[in-house]
Amino acid sequence: MDLVTPQLGLVVWTTICFAILLFLLGKYAWKPILTAVSERENSIESALLKAEAVREEMARLTTENEALLKQARAERDSILAEATKVKNQIIHEAKDAAQKEGARQIEMARVEINNQKAIAMADVKNQVASLSIEIAEKVLRKQFEDSKKQDELVKELLKEVKLS
Image: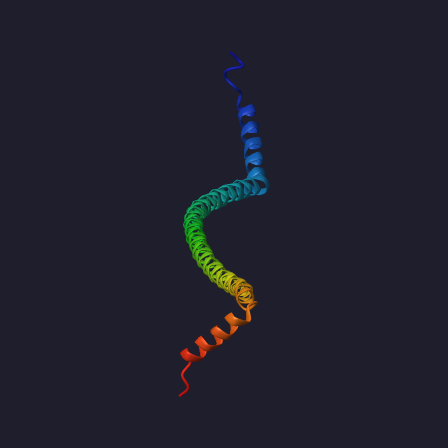
């Protein structure tokens, strides 16, 4: 039982040692420990505030990114619509130009055909006239071989021609 009931000297010395230890800890260790704990608390609180700010910034950036993405999609759709419109306009203009060019070439061909036809008709007329003259010449030669017939023809022609 001696171990359970301490003697008065042991209690006094233990109390004195405890008081000295408490004084030394209070004087030299307590303030640095409390300062370190306070600094740690402040740094944790600062980190939490920064994390909250970063979370809010991320939410804001996500919202901005979504808005930019939406705007980019709208712009893309607008550009595609404009490109389709321009494509259709170019196709329409090309068709119109092709039709006009085709009509112009058909008209030029028609004029050329008419010109060639007129040239051919003139050539045929010239050939017919030439053949007619040759035939008439041959017929007249046959008729004029006889001088009596020539005299008769001249007289007949003179009767038909009236002098004014």
